Image (cartoon, rainbow, N blue to C red; front, side, top):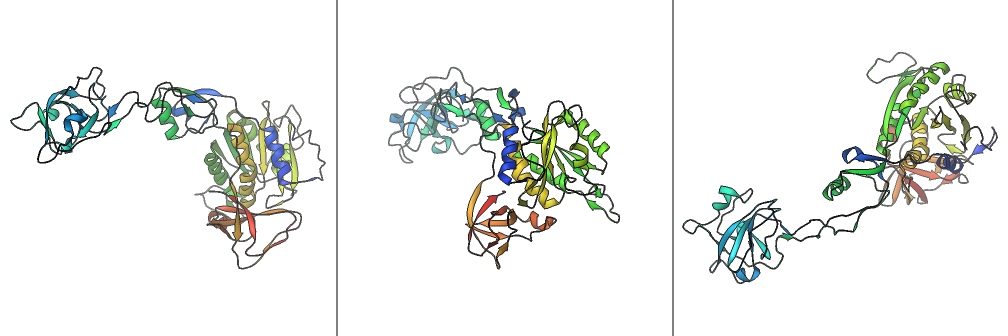
Length: 440
């Protein structure tokens, strides 16, 4: 694995954001394709182009309950002088051998039923003396459309043009046309189209399975009582939700105590259901940085496999990061810092692209735009660091949300963008155009 044990950078190398991301994306490979039933393929990425084997709709059919007619027979029809037509039969949805409509004739027809031979248009039942009924035109209901004393006839009060209220064969999509391109994420509309053209199974790249572990003996699960020195675990919830939003099947593991042996065992247990592991906390230089302790010095025979490289990035927040592979299958692992904002920003910049790469998507990045900074004062940024500040972006303007502190979760909850301040910029004045990463 190119990033971990064989990294060309020395231990004191300060990685740029771009270098770290390139290292991740050059290592992570799309998951192998599998064939799935349609509903199981929801959220997955299509591997092959899909062409249409049969036109949609496959035959001319009625878009209304009413009467199938010839255009010439209702030309000039009106309330005072209706066209009087002989009703020759009923055409229900699914009819295989509908009646033929000849001169002076009409056939009762229901929505979705094939347009019978000879007919050129459909007049809705509301345009006739059949009344304003509701529901399918068939059986006793159909017979009730004929006016009393004139069984077998219908009076039409409006003319109709050729093709009126008819869904023409192939008007949705024609046979041989491209239905869906490879690389399409399959949502409900795409699954509907696949079903409509008769595809019961489809070849896709599966949704990546992502396991999220937070570390720290001070962490308590929401709903439990806090004691002195404890905080609630928010990182594992935030990142599990973010992984699902990115398209993954995500599993949250409760906070792991600051014990290297326990962490190694926990990670080893999770490998069976992981295409990617994400940890938060324990990657800095403190005495209890458990992730770094557990994974930085293991050999190929251990859980860490090819190894995890811990590095410093020229960014704020999120300077300490780790990346490598673990286990016999060299499962990718990204180790993120523990401060909530650092953790979430790191997820957006590095983990989300990794998830999208595993899915086989051609574009793995959040959209970026230019916007004018709207602020009461200049933004300050440390020299040599690429800073990512939370912001709210609308109509070409972006406003900072909260301060630069990496613990400010409340501010993060109200942000929909990240304001990017380059490494060589120490101050950004209001009214300056800045780069913005859109999060929503």
